[in-house]
Length: 296
Image (tube, helix red, strand yellow):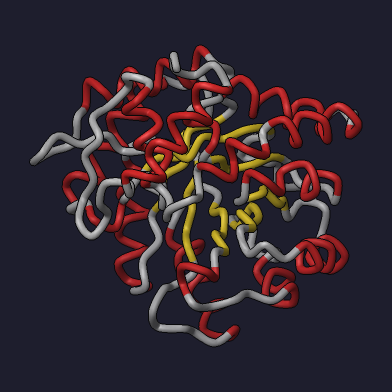
């Protein structure tokens, strides 16, 4: 039986930038904040990490830096997806060589593969590596949806661990749980659906909000894992306003802005990402102050 790469709250960590490079000292500070806050895993070079705007060399160095800094304290999972199967395989193999514990592979974007194409793509990636692969389903960004039947077919592969489900479709989560074996694990890809997905058997969340509130996201998932969904529901509601604020504009613009306000990184984005609209920025500042993350 396959084991989950992690349970609980995995932080989809931002990539701090200077004007012309990755800000590695800031990345170290962010990692320390996560580890001290109880993060159960670190996901590097995902959507929140702006990986698609990074060069290949930058991605590999960021992955290596995170692996070295975390030093085995929690699992490190690298985003290695691409809309080219060949590129996804190359990224995945090199991330394994860098020492990651798992891989997060997004559905191929723009190409809009068929379900058969998705099965071939993921099978080829999983065949090429020696670490478990988490599928990443985020149709709002990629333009393609996986079905539960596709998950069931992929679940048979020994290197495919499960899915980060960010489709906003709880019916799909339920059908996936019905069709797939117990060792095809589900992680929420939306912070505001963490408790509901874990109620249906999910093992945790790959979280944006954990960048700014790692302890609270850890505690929310811990309550779910011990079956205390009354407490988990209460925590989920307490985090509602923050989770909403972090998506007032496209991720990762709000969360990186929040971390800059908290003093962890610069407010530098890679184009076509850009600074938050002034009105939304001030609204975000108000929410952060309400949660005690910054002074008013």
